[in-house]
Amino acid sequence: MVLAVVPPPVTVRVPAKVNLHLAVGDVRPDGYHDLVTIFQALSLVDEVTVAVADEPGVEVHGEGADQVPTGASNLAWRAVQLLAAHVGKDADDPKVRVVIRKAIPVAGGMAGGSADAAATLVGLSSLWRLDISRDELAGLAGKLGADVPFALYGGTALGTGRGERIVPVLGRHQFHWVLAFDRRGLSTPDVFDELDRLRADGDPPRVGAVEAVLEGLSSGDPRQLALLLGNDLQAAAVSLRPNLRRTLRAGVDAGALAGIVSGSGPTTAFLCEDADTAVRVAAELAGAGVCRTVRVAHGPVPGARAIATEEPKPTPPEVHA
Ligand SMILES: C[C@](O)(CO)[C@H](O)COP(=O)(O)OP(=O)(O)OC[C@H]1O[C@@H](n2ccc(N)nc2=O)[C@H](O)[C@@H]1O
Ligand SMILES: Nc1ncnc2c1ncn2[C@@H]1O[C@H](COP(=O)(O)OP(=O)(O)OP(=O)(O)O)[C@@H](O)[C@H]1O
Image (cartoon, rainbow, N blue to C red):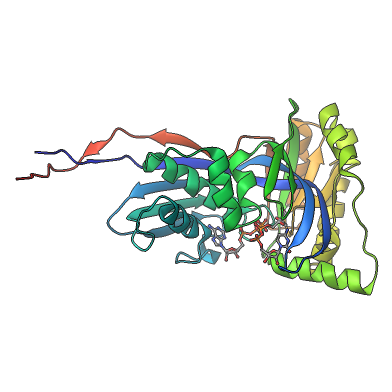
């Protein structure tokens, strides 16, 4: 007689990101743009639970869940299939259920789908007891999307290439943010296309040198860092969503040190002097009627990591002759 033990579900918490600096190069033959970016992982997290199941699939709950596909195009499901194929499991029938609880806005420029994919890779590595390093997972993550590797590492990091080549930036300082979610999402490729169009027609602003931002970070002084935040995609996001100009102004009027569009937008992120100021800015921004929802967050926080496991539940014994 053999007792078949079903491994317990694994829940992984994974952060959103903001780009403190995002320099976008020219479009490449593969349609991507070379980037130099500094990511920071924020305390706005999705939770992803992976479990062995006879009925495989994806379930999505929470913030914007109705806009997230639950079929094969869900980035978390693509992560299941990619990892299954990589370790020699049946990618078409991986016998896994993925439950996503979203807090990161969908199509918000905060890498929510990428975060879920990274969390799925980490969760499955544990569920399937794989002997796989974070660097090997990062190689797989980069195939799923430019933002996926960073969500594995978290913290603050320099990203180059398509954004998928990650080098950690060390630092002890916490920064305090207010995030304003817009009423609808923006498509990332549309925002990159809009930047190409603006550049073909004129000369939209470009961010300065990344070294200055690294120095601002290491100073730990939010007032210094605030002067250095920059995002080449901001002009494109504002061009597609002109109301963001008003949101950016409202955050600074409410007492933030600076505001930027997060990644490809339309979420705007406001750096504040300290935690108390962030709460005050959030309250005032929420009352200004310039966005759908406001959140307070701090960063950096760690990347995707398992938070809970239950005791294994033995299934009814299988009897072998
Ligand atoms: C805007 C950022 O969030 C900044 O961190 C990322 O560059 C976007 O990362 P992502 O959503 O993971 O991007 P992917 O899913 O890999 O790519 C979606 C689309 O965005 C555009 N894209 C993305 C990354 C990049 N370096 N250049 C691009 O032009 C391409 O049109 C691509 O087809
Ligand atoms: N798990 C997922 N969570 C959210 N969106 C997903 C997911 N899987 C697929 N998608 C699709 O991807 C699109 C982009 O979603 P996502 O939330 O990742 O955007 P984003 O935060 O702007 O991405 P990024 O900042 O990486 O450019 C959504 O419109 C949705 O259709």
